[in-house]
Length: 399
Image (cartoon, rainbow, N blue to C red):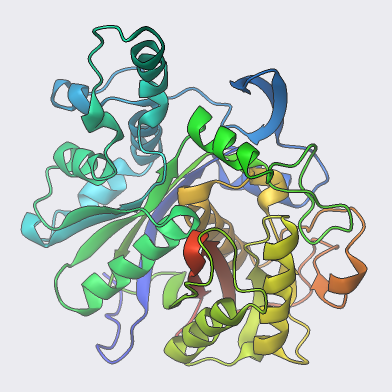
């Protein structure tokens, strides 16, 4: 076992991790996708009536069987989670064998849960008023964490956070707090969201879907691409090569779906993360933007970056043109990206290659993937409906 972190420092170690998305399912696939101009999104039909749409779909097969005790909550979302878990399950079980099961917790984020599996049944019910039984339990938000708790046989706290696009980043922060409060020895955190008609039609009704591939901060940006992802991490107080240093959170309460136009809440979250980590803005070697490619979000985020980083030219990029916006799992898959950047120390994720909005172009967008010098800290932003903001900082060393 490695050194124990000082109880005076909030950082926790990220010991085992996995990320499944349109980028692929291995570290090498993630690097290749994010350092090249290859398109990783898919043009699909069937989600929105009479319309094709670009999505970030996971292309690999999911597990085909699940334990009998999970049948009632079986869904593609759960199978996505179990598929991700399977690649680190043995390592997690070996590592956590040293702890009391009552000290092992699970906190996950999602916004869709298993609703995709009920959409056809609900259509039958509402169109035909048929005597159809809808299995509500599979789409309950809490079912994801409870199902994985049953699967692993753990007995500590287990709950799901659903704050739209900040869900899984908030799950990371909640896991860190649980450990630092002395309520758990290890916490499985992350998020899972899968493609479904509900979210695609919802964003379409808001006129927020891009007609093509999204272009964060682009001159011609016209909205988002929806994606799906599963990202899982085991946290503990023990040091690890990459640490979750800090989380800064804020709430705009400005508008039900629009961020504060001046980015006040976003800037507050970033500054709180810096303060908690005990680092300065100039210590951040890379910033993974929320970067959805909607006009309002990108404009306010760049204002927030300018407020926090001032004259420091921090390298920034959005990776959503490669993953799609994975909603409740966005923070999780972007944590995987940040973790890999810190572990490899050789590359940064490319921003899209299109023209940047002239009003937003005075930034150090990553246009060359080669990392010129070692970096020790990176920041990842997640901003959600209602102004639910969070910034995470990851590091390779304690400050």
